[in-house]
Image (cartoon, rainbow over all chains, first blue to last red; front, side, top):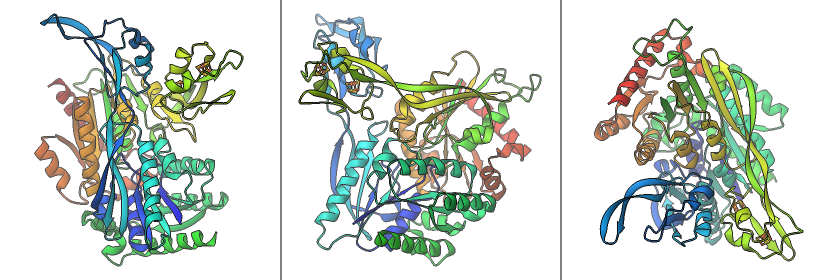
Length: 305
Length: 294
Ligand code: SF4
Ligand code: SF4
């Protein structure tokens, strides 16, 4: 079983469109949408959710106002500026009194718990926090493991890891053996990206012929190299700037990276998207022709090793 | 005044909007400032997309200063340590382990909370600095430019964003922030404290899905916002319908234009080519000012 992750560094280069097309083309596979904070793959695969699970993120500190004496020790130790003294009401001796209270901003709280340890009054407890959900679903193309990170939550890397682990267990429990896990990765190079690609068998980097696309591709290639993941590249909308496309071709050649496809700009890709269909299923067109060739290249690379 | 430019979905044109807006309101020289707006001679541009910063490609600043961004990580003095395990209990991130007569630290997991050094009963832990990124500061004509860059292989973008944002000046002047894509912690860190946020989207199911998430983030943070629809003539009408229904102002439409796409791909802000757009961005600015005042 091979894990193939589709990433790009820069957002919006066409990762999800390609991932959905691979979902339609590949046999014996499980899909994993690891872009957990702006997941889009479900819009093309239309999953029927079979299992829903809660994702417990980092805990959040809460202050018991009955015990708090406003000593301010927690304010001083918190490195995330999450605790402050605010004007508020406090119930005291059964009558409402205007009082300054110490309060925790749950959005800034990172759950380190230092305040709980330092509080001399034992007024702070750490509360479990549901930071999102993850799902195992059926689609026309096979199983999809996906997730939804709660709004303004952190720990997307941990949720990504959960999605990947569960995609692996789905492949393992499948009655007929699975050949591939196709992972739609997030943009960027940080925590959720690293969680999506570490340990993968192949990374496909989708770039575009713009200076930004090139800049971001170079950075993400350094990341895949850093983690020792075999890397291939494709250029989306290559005909929008042939000079930059040539630069990318030369760059790949110099760096010994396989360029597995150049997809032309085609408005039909957007039409397919609006209709909620992977482009290779939508119609015979120039873009889907190349995507099919790309999938065959990837298959060959996976079986070659 | 702090204006951030965000999107939820990546690649919708955040950096395009942020850079073109900055150029359109920046004075060519001291005498030529935008009518009706007295504060724009002092523009600060912050690229907070520290994982993949791109704005410098368009504004081409000359960098003058570079700073390190570090986070504190613990170091254990083995002579003082009694292997009591208190630090392991305190650490919520599994960044410390005590095995037999040894304390192991995993710096990539450390959140820099300082709990272990504060609570070690033997005072055996001190903190050392570990670099996770850099900040570069420079000037592009009338624009002060600062961006952060996360080092390759590092996971935590937020501390780098936090350091970039320390450069925000509260005195009168304009700060424009280019925000990373998504809806989680790096986005929150970047948009926090803005007076207004421009959400850039495109009229596709992906654009709409991610716009709705971004709107939830901004409502949660209580930041006023408006929408810009990029490549507005491709796709469908659902983004417009959603905005109407939610009473979200649509401040600008940018139709798909091959010429704009090509200038973008060459790293050229399109207001430099298409003068009528300069005027449209100035109007956009006036609209934003008006929305903030109300
Ligand atoms: S808390 Fe201090 S003494 Fe105890 S194991 Fe940790 S470093 Fe050693
Ligand atoms: S500073 Fe905080 S996160 Fe880092 S090792 Fe110590 S307790 Fe763990």
